[in-house]
Amino acid sequence: LYAVVAMTGDTLTMPDGTAFLIVESAADSDGERIEFEVTMAPGAMGPPKHFHPEQKESWSVLEGELSLLIDHDWRTLVAGESLSIPPNTVHTLRNRSSKAVRFRDIHEPALDFQPYIEELHAQAAAGRITSRMTLRTLIHGAMVLREHRTTQLSASGLQRLGETVLSLAGRALGYRLDATPEATERGNDTNAA
Image (tube, rainbow, N blue to C red; front, side, top):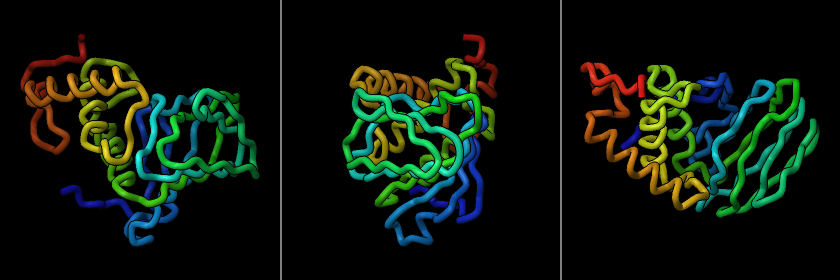
């Protein structure tokens, strides 16, 4: 089982520089919610279209403009505006503006969304997931997504199949999400692919 190590007040950073400040950790809310204050740079892309099978997600913009794709419609929220979606709603987000956007992002209940973000941060910090779409990044990203399928699922069935294949290939090549040596560290560098 995954042990949550980040606490309220900690900041988790993604490869593109998007920062997740933990406003209320899953532990502090007794699992009822996880609340982040997210800062995205101008032009920052969010995750691929996805949904949360058992979580409501809410956004409240504090500064700037946040673009949200809900089902098939793009919406832009500005400072002071909020939006919530029920479980199983396909969505993604991005900053399509020329200024940074800062917003609150809440998942209810917390489930394993905090460990999911922590794992992405850990993989980025270890250099296994980067902003470059290398095979190594795709494999590690797929492994993280497979590990947290109870929290977040890619909207496309073909993409989920691709994640499964990449995850299995990664495991066969000796890739791990923990701190153990990987295939790339043994000379099988897939970064060139």
